[in-house]
Length: 178
Image 1: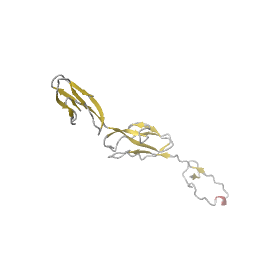
Image 2: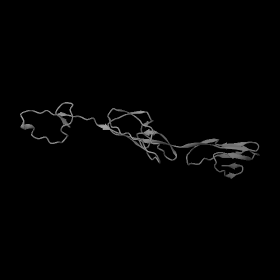
Image 3: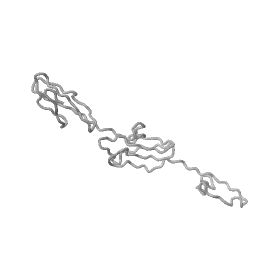
Image 4: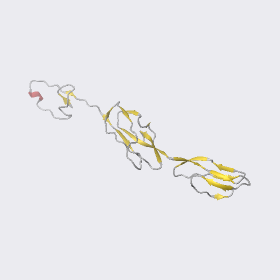
């Protein structure tokens, strides 16, 4: 907008009609009133199944340093663990953790929840009556919802006594069980 004095408040908005300025013997000087462009930081749950993304209601001029918020709305996604924020929905951008800072550029910023698939370590233990045997693999990491397979092979002349693990099932034909 425009003002009658330097560093003044807006008296005339952009596009406002100004009439009769030439009917007086005085000259009028108008000063431009500049306002910095402000940008926002928006948090996106990126497929969350519960909770809400945090809200940052501030408007930041270019060059501002912004503290990244944490998972204050207890976002959750079934089968996943929250792992911070990323500038790309697919996680290929810049990752930020709560308390990190980012610098505002020349556009609004959207930070997407970054999710890691939950995984578990499955370890099988077999007891043999005599002579021993093998469990292959002895331990493995499995993404939540997937199946783990262990091959249990008693040594020649030995037999399987018990199997323990994560409560799954045992199938196969002696002497090999999976």
